[in-house]
Image (cartoon, rainbow, N blue to C red; front, side):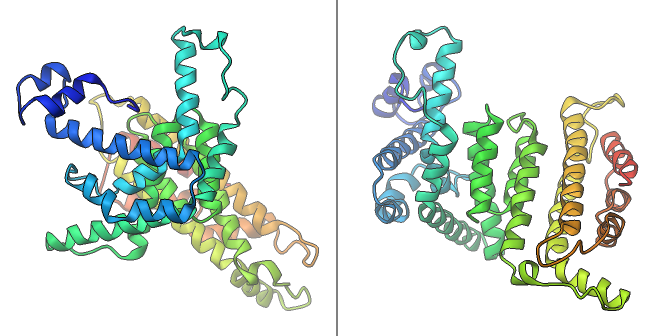
Length: 383
């Protein structure tokens, strides 16, 4: 939708509000929706050009959170558009992805693009995009903070309880990743590269990525979601380790009594286990929501249900192996802290064993064939 069509321009400038001609010129697009669409496209185009020309990040941030842009956009917005700044910034930063996608579309549709010199042919889309993300990180953060403030203001006006900062950052990060999936979802390599960058630089959390992935599995946008989820999990856990002096520098006393060693090991890796438990339990609870009711009268699972159940199996196997490797990895200062058997015991104590996760599903108030299938998969995952 980068270029504004003649029909939508005609609707905006020549037709009265609510004209019946609207549905014939642009089916499904009302005058209000046309105005909203054009305002967002114009702002995105402006922002994209600023980023392509490497405009100073402080200037871009001031533009994004400023009153001038807000006044030109907010008059056209409707419910559900609270995170519009985050959406604009993300989509503008994905300009190379958009161009690449359009090029592929032209080739598959038989255009003459193959016969012409394409200045973007040798562009590494992931590198260009992640460099832009890092360069304009303060712009992304500013957009999410401003959107979060606006969201809370709206809740306050409705007499609802406002969200705390952690909840707002989860919502903003999730919305950010949803845009990455929407624009770059045609290539898992692009989505994974962007997710890697976003989590590694703490622009959004692993949990926000997981939330976005589960939100997009229903419409088929997040293909191979478990692979992207595994990347988000791995980078998030690695960030906890690198950010903790206890984990990086703590050396275990191999001459201590066995009980003392066990306590020292648990203390050393507790931040990792706590984070892993939070993320994996979050996934299980989201799956319970998504699989809580049967989609058909047949006992045969729908393709989207199979995708969720089998996808989580792969995600769980990866996360379990990642944690076992982490707990048993030797270092120059420290011998192998625990055996593989001890590592699995620690994961079981943290309620991360397959049967423990299956019990969470059983304890929920929901029942469905898909949920039973998930329980069966988890019960069998006695690693």
